[in-house]
Amino acid sequence: MAAAKKKTGQRRAQAGLLRRRAWVVLIMGAIGLTLAAVALHGWHAYTRFKTEPYVGERELVLDLKQGTGFAGLLLELERLGLPKQPRWQWRLLERELGVAKNLKAGEYRLSARMSAPDLLNLLASGKVVQHRFTILEGTRFAELRLSLAADPVLTQTLDGLSETEVLAQIGATQSSAEGLFLPETYHFPRGFSDLDLLSKAYWAMQRELNRAWEAREADLPLDDPYAALILASVVEKESGAIEEQPMVAGVFINRLRIGMRLQSDPTVIYGLGDAFDGNLRRVHLRTDNPYNSYTRGGLPPTPIAMPGPAAIRAVLHPAETEALYFVSRGDGRHQFSRTLKEHNRAVRKYQLGGG
Image (cartoon, rainbow, N blue to C red; front, side, top):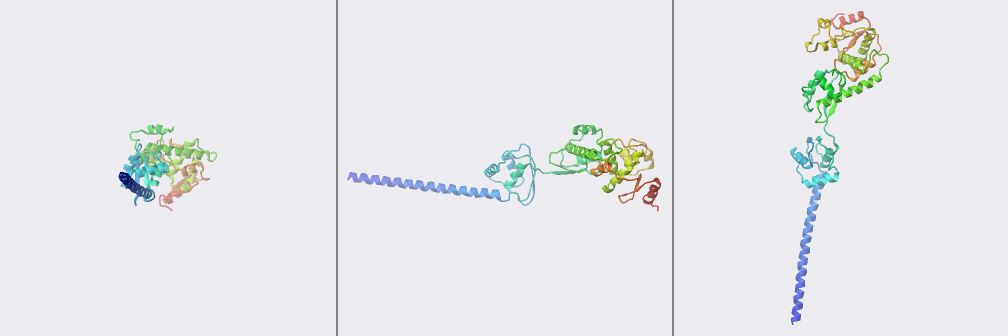
């Protein structure tokens, strides 16, 4: 009897153990299924995060400061109004793309409907927003400084610097800044300074001028590239019509060859400086100063403006002509003459209203 009871108790104990083990298995299975469901949900959420547009319907600009870490980047994205995502998703994406150590500071344009991977790849590419600044042909250095000072993106550093100090800082060897900066459109990132842009434009001019000088026509009455730059600036101010600049240059080259004065109104106007009120008078033509090409022979001491590449090429490849004179026709072009008699007739026709 006692043995039977003992066996019955053992069977009950075994059954209870089996029930407990079954419950443990069920509970562990339920936990596993729950964790699997959570993981699957998280994976689906991460997949959507990677593939769906992250940026909204309008373009945004992100300015990522130097030294900003990944956490700081996420804060900047939130400040732009972009959706807040779980940090683990960003970290996983960062490692998946392999850009963890390659994010670069700068100003970036986030295009509409850009995905999160595209955003991180953009920040790792360093393709920052490029702003533009244009130097126009015929601009004078004083005007260029004013334009630089008015630019809202360039970092301002020129205030208080003299012309000599500016030239020294960009590595220029000339004593005058006039004419030294190549007219064209320059692209630059935020953080670029006015001095950086001047340096870029200066060295661009040096390359353009030296390249053109090496390919110049033979036997020109010009001693060096700087002389070509001076004459090109005069041609630039005399005519903005690129197609006739070689003809204008040909007239001045002819005059230099025979020792005739240039007699160029723009040089006189430049010499007058702030005293010029827009009306060039005979007294101005007779009043001597280093830039008055009516009273002095040869070239002015410096350029009088920034000549473009076309004016430089015109001076170094002037038109073959016997003309020694030209006068404005009032339509942006000029009438060229070989003799003074022809020139006076053209003046009467185009300037004085005569026949």
